[in-house]
Image (tube, rainbow, N blue to C red; front, side):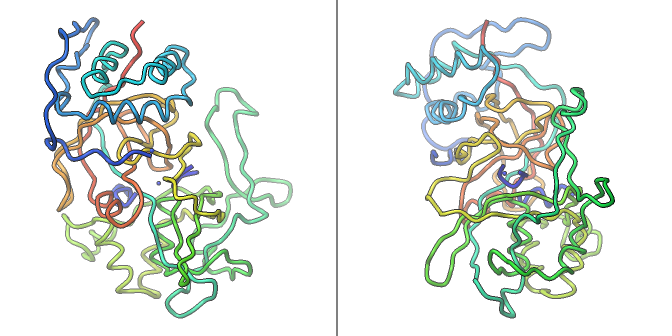
Length: 378
């Protein structure tokens, strides 16, 4: 999974921690005309599509295309049927796409207010030999690392896993970041700048660019089972960064400027360590937990214990906390990924795409979120 097996975001740092073009910020582009009479909501707390802020400005055709790409992973029979219809009928313009969505779904608010962050698939320079600058080894999954699926022992523990190593016939916690980094790596997959490797581990996936122009995909293989701890808060508390500038760019810049023991000490505040595998770069977007390429700007990582992959959601996010951020994110998105730091009902991590521009956007997303699940009509 992206960033996750974590398949995770710069905005996650501020926490502690899709093949279509990204939709423009809300307010951009023409407003489609009203289509059909409003659907009357029913039930306690029910809302209609007209109640969703920004709904008339949405790129419904782009959203439906993203849904078609990802809905095949849905397990719910009703959602699978809507998926089949969407792929068969294939509305060809925004009005038809909007009619299809409104006819086949009803919005259902997820109670409470939460948080929207974002992540991306970065591109970083790498080398096949160590140097003073490229001194951090990108490590493959260790032979002694094991992951136990606890649902095999207790059906009530579905989705719960334990990662560690076996010592004396028992599973023990795997070493943390500091201990792993203190251990020499004899079979590195590549060598990276330390701060680049740290951010690659947060995202969980990315592209390595070699001096000869060769591109290699770094894909998530495993993590050490330790909790994710973001470094933005301690950096702010230590006075290393100002309150309103703990974006990914700001954090990475500080780490690069203080490369060595000082930066290492900050990065080691996060005990989680991610291991990778290398694959040929096929030019597609990163693959999430659902096993399909993530539609940029239309895929979210969610808490798998609260939400099912393949479900469609309306994001209504505002009140940004970081300087330089878009003021609002109001759009449809498909749940196609999960994340170690993505916990709770009203919590989503938006995939912004690949490369520097996607990274700059992702690093500034930390918005209050109201979330609506689109439920198939019975």
